[in-house]
Amino acid sequence: MLSYLHAFHAGNFADVQKHAALTLALAMMQAKKTPIACFDTHAGSAMYDLASDRARKTAEADSGIQRLWAMRQRLSSPDWRPMLEVLARHNGAGETLAHYPGSPAWFAELARPGDSVTAFELHPSEGRALEAWARDAGVRVLQQDGLAGLVRQLPPPQPRLLTLIDPSYEIKDDYQQVSDTLHKAWKKCRHGVYLIWYPILTSGLEQRLISELEKGEVRKILRHEVRLDQPPERGMVGSGMLVVNPPWGFEQRLAAMMDDVQGEPGLGLSQSLNWLVPE
Ligand code: SAM
Image (tube, rainbow, N blue to C red; front, top):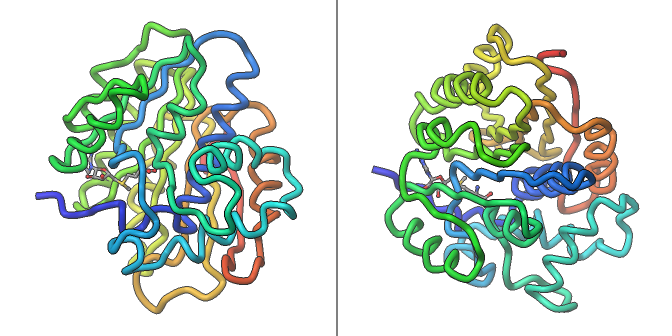
């Protein structure tokens, strides 16, 4: 029984890192004309109301996307532009954001006519909301397990692949499942770009994913982490992204984006970047 609802967390510091990496990877891949198959294995419900009771209960966006929006004139990396333009389209130029796109909406907003977007979601009510949104967004929704579903869909008909794997890690076994899925998917599509999000926890549970990948076959895995300068005593203290086959120069450009927000009062993050597995 799935109980995680992303509406409580939409636009938090982890979403800022995750969606920055997603929009950058997609923009860099789109520098070539060849079409891209985009897969979102854990999509959520696509659009979030930042004034809803759920969002206000945690107020996580206040120290995430709302801070980024407030400092948008001071961001020096041009790679924030696609995100800022999408946010402006949904929110106008006001000082506070009311709407925040989830990952399938970032894909849909930035995909070109030849690119395809497939989104998986297993939670029944999230799946229904996603389905309703997707009708006008040109996104194919599959209400099924995104890990097994991804492997079934590969290789895609398009020459290139971008996948986001972003589980809620409600089940401890998810760390192992993500590693197993990446291995299976990579064997079917070795040139694909895979983005894998994980929480950095005081329990260290995410180390299972990291150590499985360190000893596995998949090559060229970049690890980018952001850690809260004032972490809670227990729970999530940071946010990690693994990027398999990042486009050339991706690491410098992602680091430049996150440099813009590093140490920003209210956001309070430090970043680290290294190759978990080299080429
Ligand atoms: N990717 C979204 C974003 O960036 O806006 C957030 C996704 S949220 C962290 C994880 C989602 O995965 C939840 O909506 C949850 O219901 C869904 N989920 C959990 N297990 C799943 C599975 N095996 N297959 C597909 N979706 C799943």
